[in-house]
Image (cartoon, rainbow over all chains, first blue to last red; front, side, top):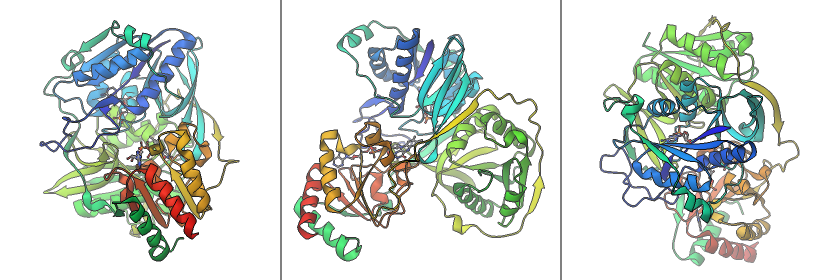
Length: 260
Length: 326
Ligand SMILES: Cc1cc2nc3c(=O)[nH]c(=O)nc-3n(C[C@H](O)[C@H](O)[C@H](O)COP(=O)(O)OP(=O)(O)OC[C@H]3O[C@@H](n4cnc5c(N)ncnc54)[C@H](O)[C@@H]3O)c2cc1C
Ligand SMILES: Nc1ncnc2c1ncn2[C@@H]1O[C@H](COP(=O)(O)O)[C@@H](O)[C@H]1O
């Protein structure tokens, strides 16, 4: 099977966010970056399918040229090669523009399956995957926890998560696109050998212009202002010395909230 | 035509999705503030009854489509039906609930029509005639005002709990039957059986006290801290999703949109950040205590009391104190 896995570089979980002076993005100065959480699960699913059926795993990413680093990690985990769409203008920030460059980059890749995450941890649009499927004219399924592929029969079954702890099996013809839910199955670590090999693997860099998006193209969604809402905090915050705050809390639970 | 607002109302054939009613509230607000006219839209098979129900709210009309191909949800027929309707009627806005179903369908519709989709909104702002949508980004730690740069219709999904369905204004609307032609739709994705893990699970919905643990616990060996605390207050143990994904607790203890919904008297959220998918499952608890080392964790926006600190230190101290007095 030839499998494409879309991975996005996002600010890491531990980040303390600070809004940049243009108010439209975060200040990236003290931020570290990682693979978007569910994309790592998508990669794991892709690698398992390759181990089982043979073939190739190609990772595709759109972002700052810095994203090469997370792509190397994906290559170290076992992906075969990478395609990086370098967005130096930070223009490719909306699902339609992303879908456009990603679908053109995949035009000549004869893939059987595209895997993505369900949602990015920075923009959190939860739509890029499905937009991409439409632009590629292939069926899709979202929030997938398990895949049973039958590449010879050109189809697969996928277990979709639903509300309230229910799941549903879906059957799709290949090629198809699946968005993978975090936690589907444990993600592997890169081995030392993997890390060594990754250095030699190919990452092809493409520019938006080569993929039909000119500098003048306007994203359909634009973040005009990013902000914190401090006044939103509802909790009465107890901080300080552990003994004292525990004491305070217990008293409040007994006397104010009357729940103990 | 650009003066219309449509609200797509989801249902399961019998009942209307509560988040869709919240979305209708948003529709009523937007209609009032922008002077536009509001219409509810129902897709399904034999949904006239549901349409009549909706006609009891203040909307201009309830438009419903009965079609055998819309009886069970498929993204293919939903998308085609909505494309046909939006191409002829071109409302300014199509509002939808941010439900699992719409998030499977709406991005396709958006890409097919070349019209923007703003997902998971919690609010809107209107200033000097410009409408922007408010949504959370960056792990719900930042808010963003998002402007749409494409032509109408704009597609918008609303996060559950962003409005109160009780605020719906009553009225009496006409019901309109609107046909669509789905004869060219090809269904490629086939729906198979549903698996329900809920059958023989631990039922947390009746628990008086829940000690819920999140990824902040870091490793399985630390789970004893949680068990000790739960023992002292006689609580059930619940968890956020990553804890269950890591197999530190069984899946049936997951709380949230894809887990259980609970409303105990006391809910202790320990090392849980407060993602919306978790919060929808526990926000109606009577008293919520959050223990978290990050001052900006969104859980503090729903908690009654917050303890800012390291759970490794706080939890044993709290257990000890409670053991003394209970
Ligand atoms: C479709 C969908 C459905 C989902 N359904 C659910 C669901 O049903 N239930 C659910 O829970 N999630 C669900 N999620 C996942 C959800 O989006 C979050 O990823 C998840 O809730 C995060 O869990 P967490 O808060 O435990 O982890 P994190 O977000 O990683 O938070 C860990 C927290 O622990 C704190 N912490 C770390 N160390 C310490 C310490 N030493 N002391 C104190 N605090 C500490 C951190 O500050 C942080 O706030 C769903 C997601 C999707 C996309
Ligand atoms: N810039 C990007 N590069 C690669 N994949 C992306 C990018 N943006 C989004 N995706 C994929 O689309 C999924 C959903 O993203 P989003 O619509 O932003 O929530 C992610 O989990 C990724 O798999």
